[in-house]
Length: 432
Image (tube, rainbow, N blue to C red; front, side, top):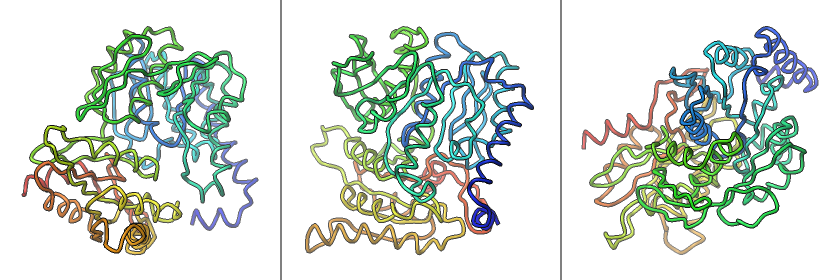
């Protein structure tokens, strides 16, 4: 029904409807953001992690903080799962959350700001003090009708935030986010310490199977989150802290306490092989996850572990372009590729799997006369996870991507099936 309405009604009227709802929600709850310091985090990948890390830094500094991400809602000490299958709530729900944060005595709110949310004006009539840009790669291209429109949606957060802009200066699209005026601009980087603007640059970077270490202005951080991409996420959060007058030592204490992020490179099995669940659902994110997963086992084993992946595609009815790309990346990095169902909605799941398989099989054929990777299709996601765990040998790495800690699988006719990749993986491992 929604798709039919969108086809019939002109975009102008749909935009007006969303904008009107945003205004009414703000009026109804008396513009609560004016009583808070609001930090908005946008980008393609890493938003939820940056929201989590930023919240921990603010709390370590003694501020009562609320936050919304695709993982959870948080107001002070109260937390609950985000089971909406929507990162940014609707306009009235979002304004109500801000109002509740004010009532609870919060000083800060950290929000994950999505392009789809911006497209529907969910961020409107919220006074943002800080805008954070993580990175940009192709996503929601069909919905936005092109990458340029997708980028423009993200840029709106920065255009409407006048105080502080925090930007990943290593990203090739950083220049677009730096073009808007702001009272203060801060960059973060793993490559460029010398810059005309204020920077938080990571130096002496070391990656381990258990995390990483790096220095910012001679302060050493020993960080338990895996992968270089998580150092970027940490730097973004550190920049927010610095922008609010929080010193590096406080940032260090907060970040070093963090053991992990739910469904983000979360290790669910450690021995005799490693099994990891991650939310990665874009080609860029998937590649970074595989690069990290390859090095999860200590080098003392003197063997490169086999990488076995369980892979779907992020949602039926959208972003069809990336399905073969995901399959291609899986075949490039993984020794065993198991393709399975994810969130098909009203689309035929077998067809989605076949489209992902086309990329995996093509890269295998093009690279040599023999397949580089074994490609297996198992429609039942539980069975796919079970198969991956069953074929894993000592020191191998199983990586299950696409859903992270999402509590639902969305299938035809609006039905939601309770789900958790982490729980399923642990259950099937116990049966081995």
